[in-house]
Structures are given as structure tokens and as C-alpha cells.
Length: 194
Image (tube, rainbow, N blue to C red):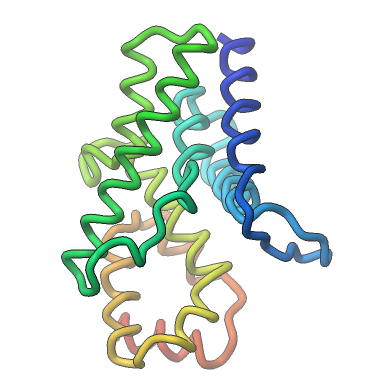
């Protein structure tokens, strides 16, 4: 359904473009933060696969859909608060993406499939959900890891890298090890993987 897919992608990106936060690109231009994230996710998807399924492309593009609307600070501090926030974000983004898909002409089964992928149902068992997770991990490591590690205590950062690594496929591990990193970031990864 190329037309329905294109309409859905356009609707997803229109919502991404509403993000009031901005992200600086490598060329110095600014994009709405969520749109930049979505483009990075799509980039990594095509690094893995030359012809990913239509539904996986939609799920990858919508993974952080309107995430700015529910800030992390709206949830309690600590691991339980973080995991609850992350779960709720996945369910909300999946529901919004499914609605956009139905409005564009997709059937309920396809819309639910994308919602389930965004919610990461079947992670570790479903190859497409694994691929979405791989993309998210690589986007984090490539674009957010260095800044994040400056704000988080060292031992906690090592544990975060270990948890991230466990969620990744062997193919994603190989790609992650090829990412350019500062000496500080590379040292944290080396320690986490020792």
C-alpha cells in the first residue's frame, strides 16, 4: 500500500515537526528534535536492510511520536518511574501511529502490528521488533551517549551501556563498535563490555 504508507509517513513527520525542541544537525542546521530522531532511526534501519517491510519502516519512524508531550519529569524518579514512563510512551506512540495508519487506509491488523512493534512487544523473539530496538540503541550510542554520560555518574553509565548492549543483536554490536566515539565514551564502552 504505497499511497497509504506515504500518507502515514507524511502524517507522522507532520507530528514530529510540531516538537518545540530543536536538534542541531551535523551540517549546523536545526530540525525539530523528534524529526531529527526519526530520520536517524530511518537511516539506521536502511543500514541494516536494503528493503525493510513497510510496517517496520512506519514503526521505526514513529517510535518517539510526540514524546515531548509527556516529559520524563511527570513520572517518579528511579528505575520504576523510568520504565513506566517508557512503557506508557510506547503505548501512546503506537496508538497514535495506528490511528494515523487507519486514517490513511491501512487495515486494523497492520495498524495493530505497528503499534505492537513500537511498544516492543516480542523483543528478543520478533526479528522486526529486534531491528527497531537495534536502531534505537544505535541512535542513542551515536547521537546522545556522549552528552548523557557527562550527566550520569560513571558506574551508572557503565550499567546503562551493559543493559543497552544486552538488548542489541550481534549485527548491531558490530555496527556499534564501528561508531566514532570520544576517548571518554570509548573507555566507558570498553569497561561495560569487559
